[in-house]
Image (tube, rainbow, N blue to C red; front, side):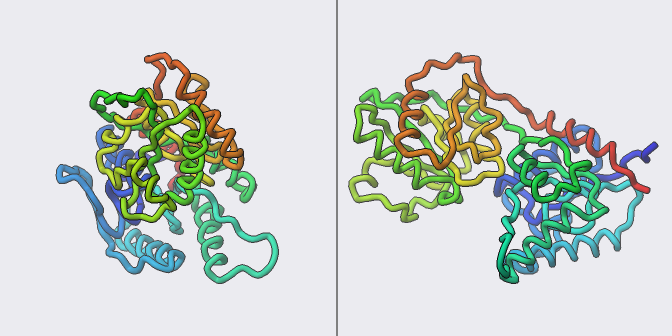
Length: 353
């Protein structure tokens, strides 16, 4: 019989509401704390943390941010040194980073694509080595992907770890309160795109789809958000007047209140939090099959296409979804308390011997 858990250490380089992975760790930690667990955060720095935070946080200081492989390596060493200096029985180390001393690791990003032929650069070699160390070493007892996209990649690249590879634990969705949507006086519907890493998330394709629609009888408005308004995204002067860019938003409700459809044709996306967020608000979604969160979309909530499909095919799907009538009670629900309960089941499997 396993010993009672005395402490759960969540390891992440930046702790706070500053990114998808970081929010995952933040919300999970809060819910575990509320459920009575002793939670400690081990990080390099706190970023955008609420003042009323009731979690113990240890900051190990930032060593370097680039190159990324060196940043991961130095952080891993600092974590290992802290654990060695602060021993505690029945302590679970749950990592969300490329470290080397954890019981549980959650994979938040798509795996590194190591070239099958030729000689890789030192940077590529180190990134691949850090990933292999994180997932395949004996100290790793549980590997948790956040989506089936990642699970399939791990199965393919590291078949030897299937025994400790779990089903995905998708992120939760916090409640977003919307103000009433103001309808366009022209009756034209609005599609929206939200993303910081806009190149990878498919903004260029979104603009191409919008252009196809506006050359047809199915004209629509386009609203963008999640990145700097001054970013050059290849628009003409006239297009800049037609497309509304809200820039970076902490309050996503301002974005979701304005759109009729979320479109997210990412080239690769481990999950894609905007997808379940939109679904939770009853907003239909059109995304690429390369998105991890595509698996949570039901027939009554939207659709997923291959990213490589033509802009015309995407435009047709956009029109179909904008014209469809969705039941008001069809929405996505996944509270963070459920995520914490799923991890509690994982933690109970850990062997401390």
